[in-house]
Length: 74
Image 1 (cartoon, rainbow, N blue to C red):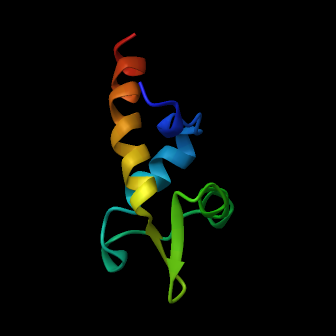
Image 2: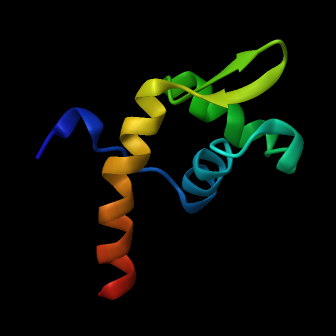
């Protein structure tokens, strides 16, 4: 297990991170507060005032997806 990729994100943070995978015109605007938290963690960024997922955020999301599935199954 890679502890670097283990983040204890809230449900809103996970959902926002997942939503950032969708192209900007097709998604609804994320919560500014949650987005700022993800940017501070380096999981999201801004390109021309458009929020996007960073490569690190994508790795965390992929790593966390299996953990989220285990939580749902429990």
